[in-house]
Image (cartoon, rainbow, N blue to C red; front, side):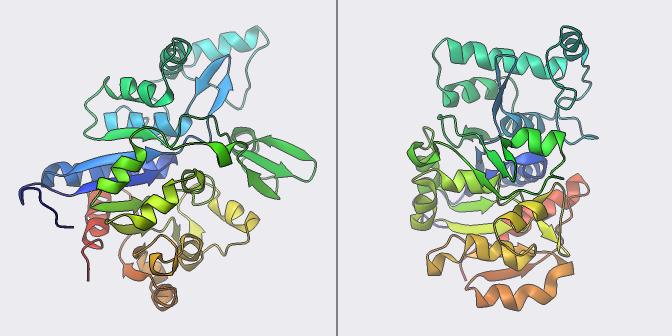
Length: 328
């Protein structure tokens, strides 16, 4: 983690993240880095984006934006605090919209601004940068790509958008697999590869490894850039005691044939020494018995508390992730 910069500078950290858990972890990591004089760049999943009412909605980007801005609804874990849904109710009176995907009024303001800028010709990266200016985030937020690469869920009777499967059906319908049409020709958003190349540490957040982190790594050029980076690569397990911390990662892992365990997800990412991504992997105290299995993969296991039940615990976890990045 040493270069020609002043020793007073803290580490430059790149975080790959998506979802509510990813935004919670990002806030703790931002806080630790700000105190240390470091910097944080978040590469955010955009594969759960969709068009609603002719508006481009980016759930993971907005969850990250609201979380870093301190305006996220802490009780729900997503959306804006102090939200109302009068517009969504009115749209349903006109026969529009879905009962299972109501957009809040404040949230709609974000989607209208985003879509307006997109219609004016701004790229997704420029739009996210404009959204960044609204609040003092203490971090730089980048989309994984400017191309539309939505996630679709393959079921026995057809294919549906990820948001319908996740939000409407609560992942109760067993998936056969997941698809990201167009991902093979997508390009990393401006600044993504540069941030990885310049990073001192790359962290994989405790986000869903299949539908949040997976699409980011699936953008051509991103995974190879991480493998080639001078940075130490650390991941935080989204599995505690054999179960996902939140969400339905177990269903997603089963669909891709991966064991729902800290070791299973570590194996999915792989050891950088063996052509994978990870140098170190944080696993929960509840999974301490798996440390030897993780080590057998060629990944350094770090056993530490993973529950992000409050701000202090989240900051401690973030500090543990940075400590794991110190070369041994």
